[in-house]
Image (tube, rainbow, N blue to C red; front, side, top):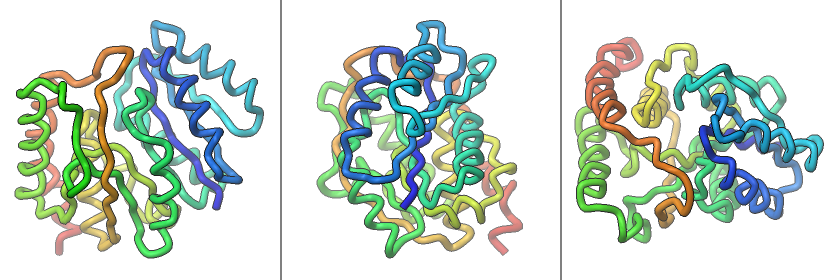
Length: 240
């Protein structure tokens, strides 16, 4: 198993070292962290370079010119990971909301499934109890909305903690993915579903970030609502 972990960053200078430390401590022999930084004003890119020097061969950094979006950051990272010979590719946030320990279980699940994902909305999963009511309601509604319109078989359609088999990502039309906010997570899951790839969800607790500001915005929410309907049209050829 050659695992690549793609982690997009924007102003995560304080969180990234903690994440890297936790990942390097995992009992995974061949692990590589690929940081995709969008020219963070807080110096996250510089911190990532320093971490790469501390862990030669295990960390690499892609520096982008500005805040180009979550979706394009992941697609860039996925393509580089595939080119580098990854046999499995994980995606996870840099804000410590995704538990590194769960990676072991997700990787093991790839023996029987094409995509293994952490889920907040299956039994045993949960979100921070201190989330404001509107955020909890919006997150739950967003998942139900996407699942109903697209017929998705997963409970956490907007979740961003996934591990993909290489052949799964390599078999997907990544150049057609257009969503850049958290609708990106929905679009990737939808395309994988249309291509008959199999999913498994593993429960986890999603905490509130200790440091930094959430990237969620009203514009991102609107994009997701609009993009869900557009996905049905854009991928009608895969539904036939």
